[in-house]
Length: 181
Image (cartoon, rainbow, N blue to C red):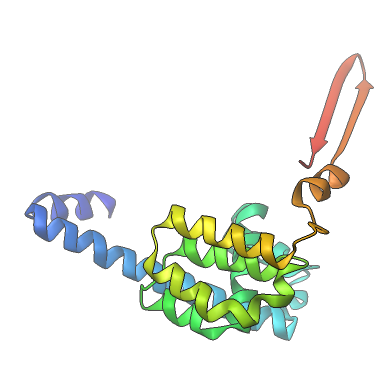
């Protein structure tokens, strides 16, 4: 199938190839919005338990065969889009990309700044739609910094406290496990 796609695309003019790329990106964005919507519904219903999963993250890992990090991004994106449907609308129609939606989700899920997300969501979404990704990343970081001015939820401090490590010797072999920031 992929070979057939390549054969189809190789015949296109540069202009038509750019249009095909843009069309594929719109399809991807709509698909990601649908994945987030389905995730929000599954999470809200708790139906992930019907499949023996203890969390929506575990359900996504098993169902989508993705890493825990990707499952967590989908979960956070779903939470943000479920709470603020214009984010889902903007992603679905291609006004923002998945990466911008993930930055919005990061701000939404921030332990302290997330409490103020709703009042700034329209402005943040507008910035997501109009700024370059790197500039929008700065805007989100600024929002988090201003909404949590005393840094009471310092991500670095959190990750330091959440890290674990162990070293064991079994049958003459050293086994090292480390997790966290």
